[in-house]
Image (cartoon, rainbow, N blue to C red; front, side, top):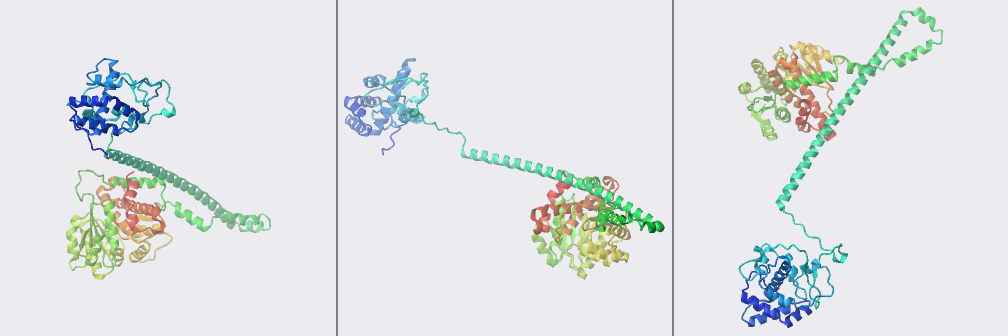
Length: 612
């Protein structure tokens, strides 16, 4: 392997001495008769050294190669403009040597493989094509022996024909470009296409295309989900319409049968006389067939009575009222303006319930969420989420005063999640309810807070800023404690209405298969689609979200609810949101769904119900 010899400039004297040696007959004969010519250039370098010029064989070969390229380019340019000296300084010496070679009898189209392999050409003419692949830097160091560079002169060869190497002994021949397509043996190699893009630019372009594709996918998926929701709503509306028609038909048949039986009962002689005829036999089977079964009648009565169900239009009207009370997100608001919620609850046994209520309030839209709990529960609740503000004061002697200090900073109080039934803590909760009521702050009472209300109904009676959220068992206990009568299981609407009236027209949300909401004057029914999964903590999600919506509805007032009680609208929105979260989480996790899974769905459920 020869060392790198490019970059050594040749003087005029050295170049002419090289041409004299290279043009000798024995050197030309050796170059023409050998495919490998390295030994020839070693001999040339030795002869050059005898003259006092120290050059390597590789330097001699490269110099001859550059001179030959200049000569052939100059010879082609001579036919056009005659500027020989500007291209090749040693044109006469090169022409004297190369013009003596015989012209081959037949020449073929030059192949790029010959043009690229200039080092191994037997006749030493590889330098003709070597210039086609040499870089501009090589042209600068090889083409001339002086300081001037051939690359600095712009050479425009307008004629495509050029001289190419041919087999030894036959000289050179001028070839013109073929008029027909080249044969398969003469097919040229495809040229490499180099791109100007760097690796970083290509990666950036690839990442941008990936992001665009992902955005398009999410856009199309969102459109598909919207279309699917519309289709489901349309199917649900059609099902309701068909059930209504079926109910009306069965009700008409039932009334007709009852009138017929009543008329037969009022005329016993005629009925007695007709018993002897065969047609009497047909009446009883027809009556039995046309009479709807008791289960179907009760289902129709539950589903389509005026008080127990709303049409799709009524549901949409209530949703519109909920949207009216939701404050818009603007840059002019400050922290805490959209809601500061205080959750009273959390003991050693129950740390999850207050967390569920507080984090649900934040995810619905509250700015700050406080938890007032016992010292044993504080560390656990704080570890669940750094967003919660935890106060371990509920079991200290002056707990009521400590909580009262924070009441002016709170918009709504949620009392009961994880409260427990310790007598000391319940006594403190009783005092907190009284202080909250005195300051006129809305309060949502759930779980063990309802057990406290059942023991002392007077602490909340008559305060219309209170919202109670009992389940069926808690409602039954509260109903019997206040009204001193057992609850009528066949008239849930009437029971909710009467209990609200007995407590002074405060808002009651009876949770169940359908949520019944009443303020003592009206009863709203939330039958939004949920799921059959019932896991602990769903009521805490409801109470936390209700605390935020109650604050928003209280600020909006009855002007934005068309005269309807704002707390009724807030309760309906919270029930619908809880059911929507339940439905979405159940579709993803099925039977393994938990309340934590429901909480992760609050954002999408809220947008779907109230912001789209």
